[in-house]
Length: 475
Image (cartoon, rainbow, N blue to C red; front, side, top):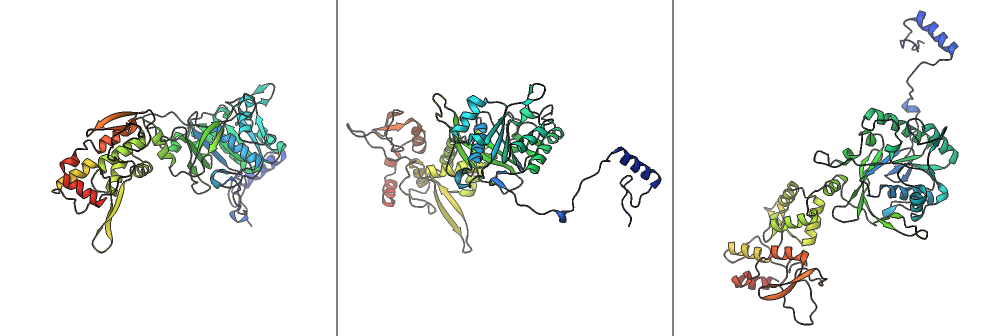
């Protein structure tokens, strides 16, 4: 049976007079020629992925987390280390972590005054967390992923039962690697991933977002600083992004996952507690429910340079678009999208303003469309005026306005509890007394805009008494 020659690569050997002496010389000198290592797929037994945190962190795999400075990336890595060290529960009923040991690299925070106090605040089992400070080699130097990977492997085997290695930030341990060159970054990170798979430990690397600017992409994966290899080499990547609509709330969102379906987003806040007299470290406090916003949507919202919040912009858009008229829902959504208003923000604004909805059918085959409307005093009068003082046939009966819409002001008498005429909430020092239609009322400063926008003139009721009576009957 003819075999492929390991010298010339031909079957059978094309030049035995050259190949045979070359092979003999290599054997005598103890040299091995380069060759491709391969395995037949039929000889490989399938294995299930062993999750530490389902859908997010797995043994033998590399996961990356990125975000802006101050958004709690390091506190998040502390939480992960603490949860694995004690075999604790993951947030939002995502299961329990298998207990294991953790090796921690942290180039930016002090071990005694920051890392360990944070571990205590997160209820970590300190006996199971090992913090690497330096490499002892003819002196003291920083760990280098390019040259010291064998030392990390040695430490994993020495400690035993290691489930996770955290590298924060990974850019501090890349040695002479040019972080903007894809090939160099992959050349450093791929051996790390191979070691993780061989030793069955998870790798969690922390990195930063690149600076935002007019020319930068709002695609989350493109915001990881440096080469795209920082997200290409890991099997999963997540982003921490501050919630643009809720100060102090931080979102933990999926950016990439090659080994599981897209996991749901999470939200947390950074709190503090005293763990020793005078030592008050920060820790992650999770919300109890998942979030639905995507990383790209959250990133776009957080980088909106306008003075108004996204929520306020959406509410004002709905007032302008829907006041007193029925508008197709599809048209409203498309208009909002063109203005850069996210669907999630639009849904919240609809709920807050109490947008009315109804179905308009066409024919007998079920065709039709959904309509949206906001019923305001002046705008309703305008619709009625355009229809000779009567409600349009397609206009549904008026309902009592929700709390977010203007209500009829009432005079303030001595001793009466003062409430905002718009939201009916108690006055709290951030309001002013105004006269509307000859009556004295109170308005919160933040409510006055919506009150006057919806009903700039309450005297319209007097101008159209028949409409007033019609509205009274429907209510």
